[in-house]
Image 1 (cartoon, rainbow, N blue to C red):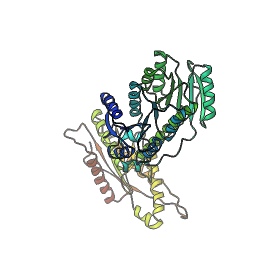
Image 2: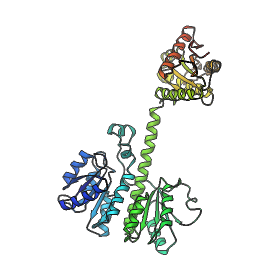
Image 3: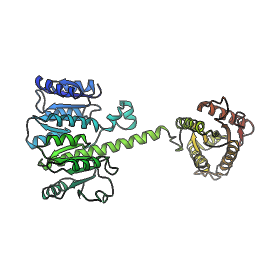
Image 4: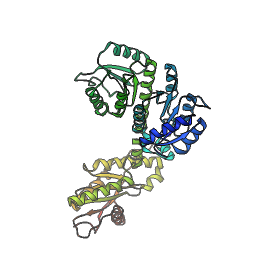
Length: 463
């Protein structure tokens, strides 16, 4: 079930207590008593996060975490460990194995619930989009994540206390990433950084009150840092502050006196997650662009053109202005492929497409809707505008001489255009994108039949 928290603990009493607490906080809960049951439940229920004991009856906790992240689609499934062992090295081992956090038993209920809310709020991009496996593979989301992140930028914000400065020096030496130190309270805070930081490390003083929390909230929402991951160092005894900080949008917290190795590891994990999400967002943008773009010419494709026409129709109905739809088709293009080959034909088609695009007015659009067929949309245009532009496009194609490798004489072509002009104010007029393209295409057929290299306006166009 989507949104479920899976509790993994060998003791039934522990599972029952945790289920009561989480259910009261409106979490959906599933339970597993062994590592084997946990793996089966993850594959079956696809939980939002795993809350597991650091002491399991049938498997080492670190091994289970690595096993969970090795499952298909679970490489970034959040895992929160409740451990009775407070040894710094144990915490570091669990974090290095892939745990998102390690909380000591017994833990504060408010902090635990805030941590689970934080995990849900900061779900990885692909989990947040709820992509199917096939879609994820098509967009590149299913690719395995590799190691830790490439070199990034960590910015540490502190008040200048000697203890904080000493820790920053140790962290800067321990990480391979750029590490910048900034003083809080400066009016030009962060302006000296050329790029937004991947991770913000902020030091909250003991007894931090409203001013510090307001500043922290501003950092989590400011344009320069709202995409940054935030790690807050807080007083280890202040459970109320821990819950408040997590609910403000901070991604992770650690104690001021935590082992520097643990803090370094948390910074590395946050930076890796940030860069992984950035990569996924870039892949998504690339996939969305590919979905509406013709790969050969770089023009929009038919899918985009029809949706754009629907928006143009709605806009025209609101404004009452006419608009033009033109379908253009290259004349005798098959002869180019037959004579010079399909690779040369692709070059010719691309060159003509770019010439047509450059000849249009600002605000007009050009899409490739077939092999050598193009769709032109002209907002706020009447018959005279459409006719003038169509003739201009015909002349543009005639004047475009295309040089091909190994061919002595440049290739020239002509184009035929059919157009229709829609008037939303005309009584009884109904406009559908496909029907309008069909009407312009019918006019194109007339242009082809009339001798090619000419323009025909549909008789159904606005007067």
